[in-house]
Length: 334
Image (cartoon, rainbow, N blue to C red; front, side, top):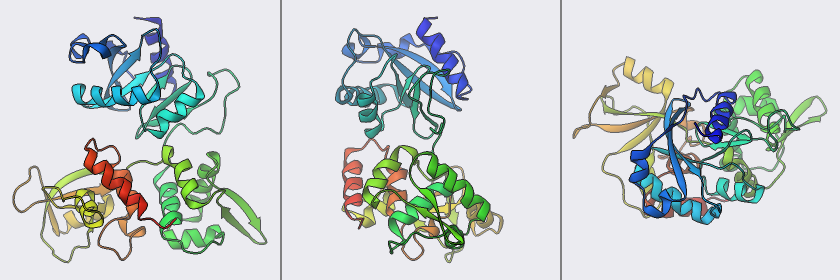
């Protein structure tokens, strides 16, 4: 095994990827255009329970972030599934550009940016003077909900005490304490004592805070299922392409898509208000089971909230979908 792959395997083990030793994938390499096969070596590995194609940059010159973005799209189309780049070194400026473009990458012993799996952006190798507060993963569901509520639902500019946040979101004080620590660790908020109360203070105006938070946010969708709705009074929120079509000019997908929390889905299935099926037919709809209740962020609307919708579709490869998502963000009153 190449020394770089040994270093990669050791680092991935450190961050809990549960990795098997990356294996060279010559067949996949042959499926890439010639210009890419001259720039990268391809390895297969299972990281965090997912199969990844790892593209090790081996050319004499590292491509620019714009070039890497093009390579990423070509590799995704040719290889399918999850694709991530491996660089032995990566300047801070290039790293920031890749994160803005949501391009997965790993720098052995230093950094990993795998949206939906892990984010480890330490500035120095393990054993050096690292950043102890840098998170190794995405935000928890309660932390994400609080941020999205702040962006979209909260209308005043006051700093709310933690007790009020707990009441509004239905979380315990213990959960809110963990949320505060988690958001503070990535500089997305800070706790401030105000008399007898502890308030959450956000450091930026909403639009700037959204941009700072994006690398730590992930799709709310836990899994998707086909189902036949038995109770027409079952409360559902339009999601996926169904919601995007209602909120923008894009056409709806072939199948209606709705969202429920995982707990609500299981309760509805148990009470026979819906029947889960293995395959679609003319009576089925697509149900997204979310990590949090869609109604928390969209209590009155027919669709899920805009930012959760954006996060659920942000990795869609279709250019029309990406254009519609850009329009969706423009609708927000930051």
